[in-house]
Image 1 (cartoon, rainbow over the protein chains, first blue to last red):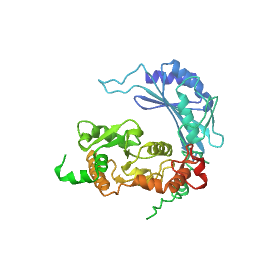
Image 2 (image 1 turned 45 degrees about the horizontal axis):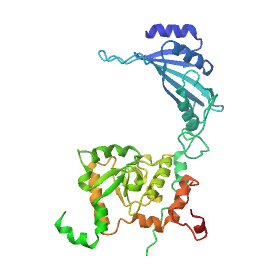
Image 3 (image 1 turned 90 degrees about the vertical axis):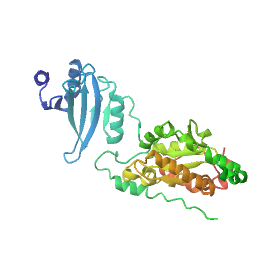
Image 4 (image 1 turned 135 degrees about the vertical axis):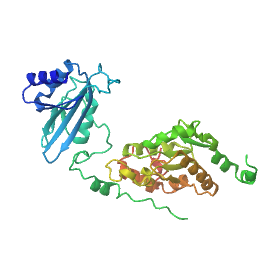
Length: 171
Length: 190
């Protein structure tokens, strides 16, 4: 199944690299423009569950990497042989100066909270997302806190360490 | 009832009643809450010590902070603490409320919880065993006996400082002060 899917993918899409690091995993690296088409193709091929959408900050390469993990509801882990169900890992890179990406809610509706989270923690803007409002954080940050150039120790020093202990008045 | 304590009961019955009926608010923060179900159920049975969980802060007088406190949780903790009737006792559970623990450089975790609400006792460890909760409860009994578990009195007397720290961490608070913070604003308190 792995190899037939790989051939199908490589025949349908140009400019993608497909590799099979393990038996139950397929990694696809693609350009950001072709991601919605690949997702739609994979959904039609039976991978109907977006298990995770996350982001990585590659500050040395000056880009963010979005990582979609897809799997299928209809497959199960094989208990006899111990083989896991097939996971597809789709990676794409977007530039750090202009972190823009098109929302994939139209294809996988459950991407909505993931995109809100990434917008909040990495500052990546998802075009077409209905509500990019704060989800987890309580205050505004100058740099989104999951970016690598966010200095947590300086932030802790400036905010939490500057709050004084309560001095108890002795009677 | 222990016959040795009968003089204590006659001297300060209210204090003894508080001491042996600690109602812990069922408030979950962080990972420490995973220790609470075995503590209150049959394996360790906290009711031997008079500790039972209750659902609302209005019925509680013991507040267990069971793990790291994020900035958003701090808001809920303050609101819960202020709703509890006096006398009330707070116990920080695990190393994270003490000084941040393994989240000492996290952008969103409160480092010293006693800057924001008064704490009567700490249980160190990551995680503390359920037995540590009972040791803490017996220590709390001693403190109540000696009038040293006075966190709620400290809160009342130093409310201005606590409120200032809460506002530094959380920005503007949307609820009015529990106690008057200054003479001018006394008339505005609702």
